[in-house]
Length: 443
Image 1 (cartoon, rainbow, N blue to C red):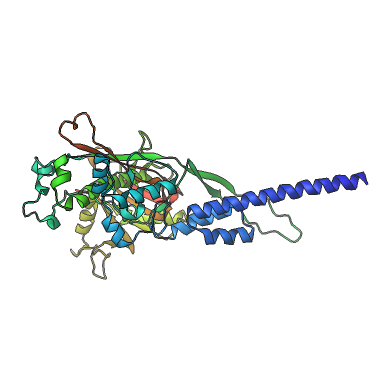
Image 2: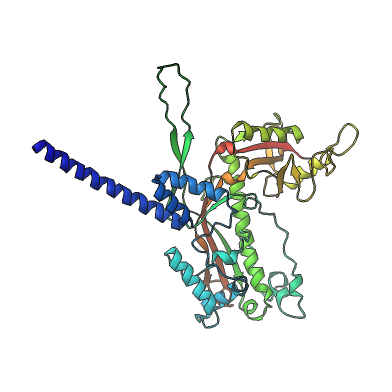
């Protein structure tokens, strides 16, 4: 009888422990589903009895197959196109300077809503993810009416604002190539990863199967912040045409975007920077020569082969090259003098946008062209080939704008400092999903 009672108590303890574990499983999957807007998938995994790790892996796979901004972050307010156009960063700046939000009620409400969704406050204001509209993310000259190149040319004197001439910039390409965005992160994030798989064995009749287990590790992301600082004069805020709104916004977003794009490509992993693709241990490598080598189609194909040999995903594969490399490739000719990289069916396809061997080619001078290999000093270019969906860009919050109308150097003139901050990190799922040649000579 006593043994039976002990068994009953043990069964009750096991039952309670099992129920508690099940509650925790449901809570974790539900919370993760809400964070990444995957509630329907979460319900399916809960009903199937799948583990939290199974749901985590499938969520990341779903996000990799989803266009990067279709994954709505927690700061996406689902604004209409009209509301996005009406959001004015300059109005919000003026409201902070005047300490009067009566003319910027919409902007204030948007910022407050984002703050509630993120669970954080700011002394400035948040810009909803909708408003960024995939803008490219720095320092630049202050905007001043008295100095033509710094704002004076924006003061209305039959100003053709629609024909504003912007500065020439590099082009940000990493996100367009298909990088996976992980929005709405909180705290440090570990993404579990299966590093090796279980083996299979053929056995004879009555033979024993050899035991073999998969192994696991993780990809860790931790918050890193990139910022831009600009200055606007009091008269610029008061006198300029509406073009100043788009100019100010574009300048901040594009400069931050370029900084993020460059870090994704070649970040050092030190000094507050994320670790970029080309500096990640274990990526594929194609070597031209001791002193570099002229770029060739053979080397490009070797980059493709490196990914295929490692079983990298086929989706989102593509090249990233600078303009020097593309220009050099376009000059290559056959023994008969015919150009090889051409829209002609007999050659490798070019065109606009270009592609090679059926893979898209992203052209940006963010890809470095000043590298050194042996005696070839400062003249080597990188060529990166990768499955770009394997690049993870984790975002903590959204773009935050802080305004300082009391800067010691600008106070007497009424100048206003504007600081933009974005917090994120960059990692690759599998190093073998990328390959690089870092010694391509492009005379």
